[in-house]
Amino acid sequence: MQRIDLICVGKLNAAFCAEGVAEYQKRLKGLCEFRIIELPEVTVSEKNAGLAVIEKALEKEGKAILASVRKGAAIAALCVEGKLVSSEDLAELIARQAVGGAGDMAFVIGSSHGLSPEVKQAAAYRISLGRITLPHQLARLVLTEQIYRAFSINNHGKYHK
Image 1 (cartoon, rainbow, N blue to C red):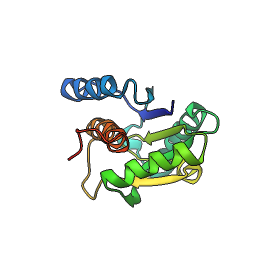
Image 2 (image 1 turned 60 degrees about the horizontal axis):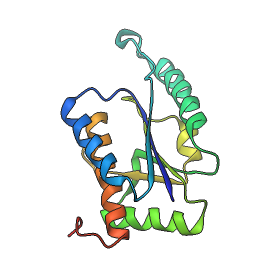
Image 3 (image 1 turned 180 degrees about the vertical axis):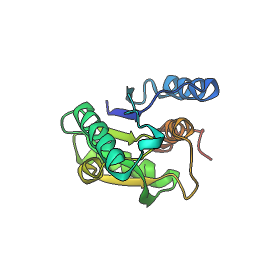
């Protein structure tokens, strides 16, 4: 069974997002082995938030992210400069990874400051959920739903119309 990890920097504390993520996690059972890895965001004082401070925080978060990726898993980094993908594109990417590789994938959502260059370089895929800016908690909900939709598409389920 394909293993899919969602590695997120920051806590999920909005109740409506947590409920939605839990629902899609439940729906993914039997389709893949899905887990969420939640890493702490490095605290950056807004008054000291110069570029060097932010880069250092991103570097620390990046090391934690990369240490959390399963050995051999393909990394899909969500980033603003990523490729815009449709639901069908995401389904194809997941299916192609399952057939062409070890199958394991790690989707990564960074902190409010983004992702470190090291994580982006390590990523086999850089994807974008769109040109709009989403809060990280909402991005987690949307991505979890899209992963479920991708498996529904790949298994010819009724969810995706």
